[in-house]
Length: 391
Ligand code: NZQ
Ligand code: ZN
Image 1: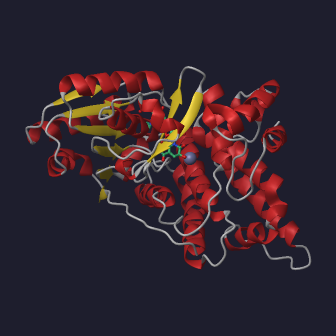
Image 2: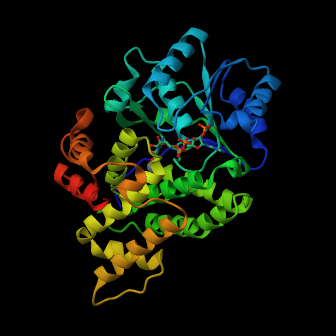
């Protein structure tokens, strides 16, 4: 295991009706004037927004609102939010929604206390200072409710990139699994896929002797394999929703990723797809990840065989471990298909003729140096080959 430091100070409030405590926690974490940030309307339709506003009003906390966050959030609304925060002297941002809303809130939080262009943070500058952000989560997926990351698409060039920094970890996150019961099955499945992808990005490592995090990841993957289909079959299954919601947080607050190298090429490869075609991030990952696995299987066949036996229930073929490894990937594909996820470029609305440009952008765009991936380092040609496997 490698040396590490780990500090994840988000205060979690989990369970039914907990959104009514939003005002209490804003006050506890020092908010005196709040920006409530939300998306395209699901929180209005479910009246969640009204309940959150009532909670703030109950604590006597004034607020302004900014809705309209698009899935795969855009830079334009971030600039608008930064202006608004400065003008209104906002000192706390409350994100009510999914990963896109939380990421947009984090970008506004960092940009509001920075003299330069907020996009600097999405070109590699670490975020060391930001307004505090609280979240009321409505979808188990991105893990942004506990992560120090934010992903934004810069509209001039459609660059989808991440920023990071401990200052971006939410001060508190309210997780009520019942709020996710209104999700369409497709969005639930996208979330399940993203959560599993966050686990695989950490699982595929070159670091040896990482039994504790290997076993944590496998446990969370097994949970997703068990609970995912239950949620798709019955969207109102509170207990399955609850297990998935906590797994989604655990998958990405990096408790499973400390002390080990990680990969993240599949995310970079996917981000080009959701930037270009505006597909859902989880759906893009469902197409990318199995292709990435097949392409890189020979790098460490035993690691692929390990997950095949421990998570996908394959029996180990000691004479031919690659056969076991491939069987595991096939079972992963079948699982994704069973929850309604796409498997090809065509199903995503992506076009083969765009592959060379996307592969170039994935490894060189926005200041990148010509390769991506920590487990296997991929060149522009490798990335193009992986895209071609998805046709
Ligand atoms: O906008 P509204 O109307 O709220 O609708 C949303 C949106 O259309 C809808 N939705 C959310 N909760 C709902 C609901 N509909 C009904 N009932 C509910 N309870 O679902 C759609 C998707 O929402 P979004 O926030 O985009 O989903 P998700 O949480 O998957 O976030 C995706 C974004 O997070 C980024 C992705 O790249 C993508 O841009 N990621 C962020 C990460 C991070 N910050 O750490 C890591 C991830 O790897 C990921 O890259
Ligand atoms: Zn993701």
